Length: 193
Ligand code: PNS
Image (cartoon, rainbow, N blue to C red):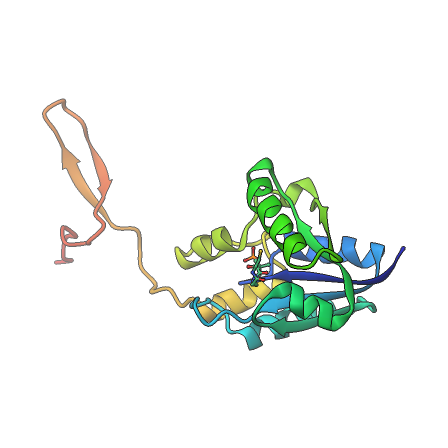
């Protein structure tokens, strides 16, 4: 185990199974791990900072050396104020690498004493991102297996989709095709007699 404190900063909007996997891995390596949620006034998140804090606290309640916090401003300054020696970040695929490398080098320029450590989540989570989870959930798709159950429940509460049947319209064309096509506006639906 590495002596000292590491910070795992991020947006966590919402926390995913990939984040949780990384927290569990980080907790095994670092003596203390602070999961730090960025308070970003420029972005309109799906979940408030308070909601994300609550979810992450619940999810990590069993992990003794993990604390959840929030920060604003420069991450390295917050990390220094905690006495952190490492920044933990997850890398899922090569596509993450460029952005993460740039951020790690900028953070090193800002604070050379802080070391960025990259860890990979389990490969079964390598395609999961908060952005895609939000997109799937907002379109009414299933998020089971992508996020912990508490987050799944919160997503369900947040996104109240109007109940509707799939809308189809009878069609036929010059090629002789006859069948049903989706009628997104539902304008062609036949009224019941
Ligand atoms: O989960 P995310 O959105 O990829 O996390 C990005 C985060 C919060 C780690 C990064 O945007 C950050 O540290 N922001 C705080 C401001 C800062 O220090 N910017 C310089 C980073 S090089």
